[in-house]
Amino acid sequence: MTSSMVVPVIDVQNDNFKELWPAMVLAIKTASFIALDTELSGLGSRKALLAECIEDRYKAICNAARTRSILSLGFACFKKLENKDDDTYLVQVYNLTLLCSEEYVIEPQSVQFLVQHGFDFNKQYAEGVPYIKGNDKGGDSHGINMRMLFVELLRARKPLVLHNGLIDMVFLYQCFYAHLPDKLGTFTADLSQMFPAGIYDTKYATEYELRFAASYLEYAYKKCKLDNSKSLEVVGNGRHLFLEFCKYSGHLSSYVDFRPCLAGSSLEGPLNVCQRFSAYGWCPNGSQCPLSHDTDLIIQHDEKNKVEKKKKRKRKRKNSSQGNVDLEGASENKQAHMELKDGEQGPDQVIPDTDSKPPPVTEQVDGTPVQGSESGEKMMTEKVEEGNGVAEPQAVSADEEMKTDQEQVEGNGVSEPQPLATSDATKKEKSKRKKLEGGSHRAGFDAFMTGYIFSYAATLTERVGKPPCSESWLPECLNKVYLSGKSVPMHIVKSTFSKSSKAHMHKMDIVWGKSFSSSVASKAEGTI
Image 1 (cartoon, helix red, strand yellow):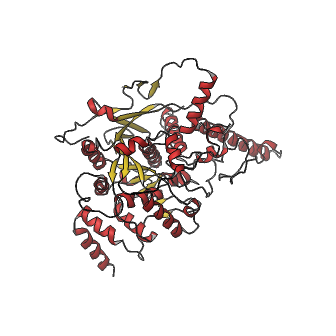
Image 2: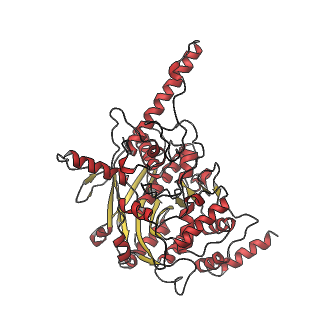
């Protein structure tokens, strides 16, 4: 059973952007790593975004980034506390509502999905933080604005963590940095210089390192949370992950959206699992699907299925050694961990094999199909400096008491009011709403989940005997970005055959001063 906690997410919009600026910059500067997530106005042609040729795929994503926009940006700063036992992080989460000041395309499918999951378009158009895309214009490279916040992110030289992050990186580059280069090799060369501490993709880590049965964001987060809780129950089971959050008081508390992460549901009786939702976190039938979309129950079903398969293999080996035939150990009617074609119906209960590495899959390249998807999966088919006017919030452990108007939280447990008797119609409506919302789907909280997956995976790396230091961040996943439908990731490296773009070099001069271009030129001459 997973523990419960409440995650404070600070809502940032145009009316409090400058007030919260010092807090955001300080959180970025002092973080050990930073997790990001975006909500987009659309992605354009799904087929082009899954082109077989990666260069063609990059061009399609660039076209989407140049014509669409980022509607909200979430970032979670995880600061490792060295004076604490095991792996303890102080976490600060921000959710920025944004508004592009230029014309952009917004797709009805994206609007429908975002509205279903609580996105407030009235708030966006009334209070969104304005920004312009492409290269700097006028005084954009100075002052307090989104482009300068991105510059602060680059200056911090922190590891960047994303989930299925190729589309996020392309949009971030176009919206807050400069015009995108035409070639993928140039883009990756720019990224390698922009983020020298490395880029990590938790979808790649989930698929190829943790090897979970599914790798969509909500599943991976809840699975890590469950495994971490289990490890805490076993004495002497290595390092564990602990989180602490800032306690916001006074008027700052009015900016905070407390997001409860409740303990997982209990598995009782048979569970009819929706295969598509189980594998990918979305279902073409949406709320009309008669099968279960409860991620907690799906994970528990996976765990139960895994234990039963191990028992069957053990019995099979025992019977084989005795010359008996074990019919129970025969292959089951399981379907591979890949998406069904449109209109194809699979068995009601199919849980992917968790004992083998998931094969590469071809997925829809969109986080916003009409019936719903998970917004953190952009490519699926798929505190404050003293004297600046803002008092530094005091760190408070997630184990300490935290209260909201709707629930009382003590430690990592959430004590909720007893539910009143409800009619069948009310229960049905609540079930439908829960199935639509999926428990997350907000840029700030999605960024938190991404950071949680990364920090938990890092504790596993340390458990196998590697030193607990920043250099041990998932070395097997460094600068590897997940690619849908491909068995190998995209590597964020500068090839000897690719040059950095001129727009990037100009921008880096702003970030680091004129010395950047000259230092790069000196290094290039030294390699000749």
